[in-house]
Image (cartoon, rainbow, N blue to C red; front, top):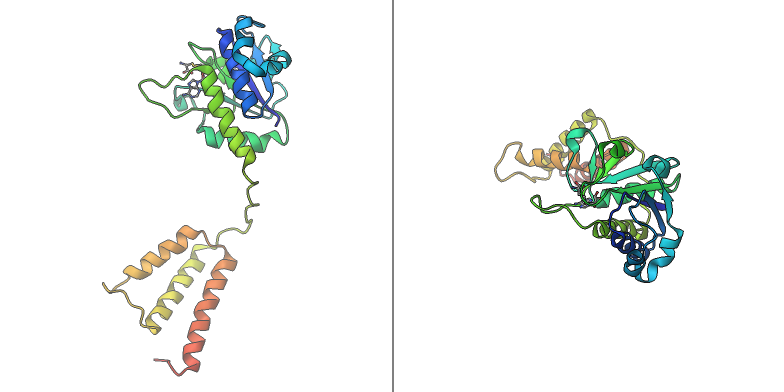
Length: 242
Ligand code: SAH
């Protein structure tokens, strides 16, 4: 799975090792390190446990710009919601779906900030959107490697899920068509004596709301109208016209 996990300016080598382990357990292997404080490092190797092969293959570069240069999608992670600074903020699940979809075209990257202060604004400028793990608003900052684990897990789930069905392309039916459907349904309900206990337009309004929620396209409206017409024809044949 060509998803690139980028750790920026990590201070504790143990976090790099634990992040490598988190990645390997979820089946990812691309670890990039931007200006790590100390690497390679025995503590990193110790915490990587059996994932030291990922550490050996980790790419070390001096700037985030270099790490994301060839990427088609770059998502930054942040404990603080910075939507006020115009970055859209995604949940880990939504982010995973977007990364998996994008990774088919070009490398897609998830960027993790330095332990104490997270990603700088200049680093965030290289990101297309932010990901925030829902957390206690009074204490939202996870350990770096644990944040990596949660995102890697969501990516794993998204990668394992069956590919979404191609979305039906038909545009929604115009409102006038929905109005005709509602009127037609009203006629038939009266004909078959299916009336609202409370009287009045209540039932029809509920039905119209269901139709609206379903986002019917023209063909689907035609099917429902066809069924209503068939009900009417059957009643006429049975001499039920009133
Ligand atoms: N105050 C910093 C916390 C840094 S914690 C901040 O606001 O981001 C170090 C890194 O762990 C973060 O840069 C981010 O990559 C990750 N992280 C920690 N908690 C997170 C959370 N709740 N959501 C997303 N990423 C988180």
